[in-house]
Amino acid sequence: MEKKRPILSVRPQFDPGLAMVQSLMAAGVLFLPVTIVGGMLVYILFTIVGLAKFIPASGVFGFFLIMSIAGIPPLFYEIKKRALQRTLYNFYDDYIDFQYFHFYLNRRRGRVRYRDVTDINQHASALQEQRRLTTIYLYVPTMSFARGFSGVKMEDLPQSKGYLTKVMDLIEASLNPPVPAWDAAPAFAYQVPVAPVAAAPLAEQPLAAPGAGTDTPSKG
Image (cartoon, rainbow, N blue to C red; front, side, top):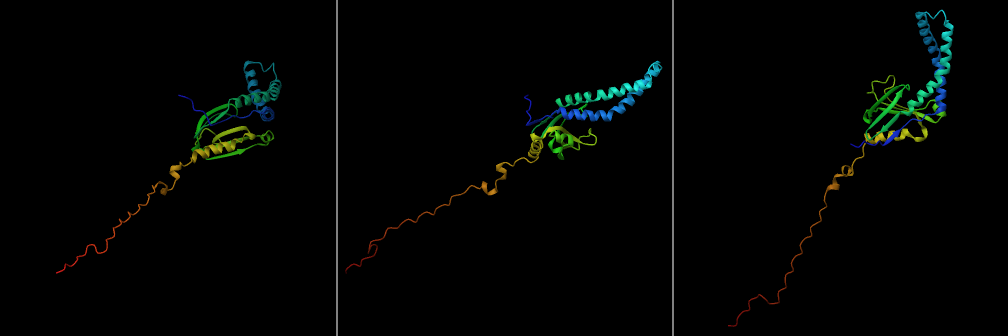
């Protein structure tokens, strides 16, 4: 069986500048938890095996501090790059097949019928606006695996492509199909016109000759 071809295929755009800024922001948020949790776990392990007397706690926590600051940005950069390269949204006549990665780690695949989409909007963060990118949200209440947002999130799409208008047109065309011409025509269009029947002309009667048909008296 031949595979059905999508009407519209949408892929996100990986922007190196945006990914670099986001990686630095992620490092600023994560370096302290990584340092504390990682350093504590490793130091407890060293204590159990008897290495804590040779390696001070400051050395362990300092190592994780340096590694988190230096390692989180390139790690985040590569994870996002690979996630966006494998992200795809295929739009068909009445449904969408999608694959994307939640937090760039958890892969999500599925299919959504257009009739289940309750709303659609577009939002661009300040960083995305600088790079002329945007995010489109398809709200689908029946999608139970999403937390906070139930639906399909299409992130880092180029604004110049006009994907919001294209997606809205596809959904509206599916939900409001055009009415066939024979259904939309008025009832009188089906009436076959009947040509009027002309009255038959009266037959002309011949005129009688004078004196014809009268009795002539006889002479006695």
